Length: 132
Image (cartoon, rainbow, N blue to C red; front, side):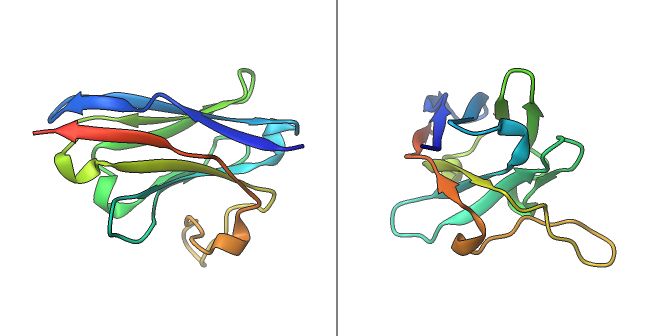
């Protein structure tokens, strides 16, 4: 049984930093593209970042690109979302998702897929709360 697990959420002050981690259990970790999503109360879920199976293609969404970084360590079977200079608007439940598909691309760029059907497995989420 494949399970996705997130960890590292918590309460952080504005301007602070937090690192989330994600792992996939019950499957070969390197076979999965990993994505981070978040959902704030009353808002739709949005993609935050994603990373290719090898880790060679990390992508952060425009709203967080200057502050968040995604990386992975396949030896440790973990993907990390390093959040810096956090803002109250970053308060949300953060979800990790795993897909057996490669990252899609246009003619020039790779991008994070947002359709729920693309992602095979989802974690339960970890809460991030940024205090002002």
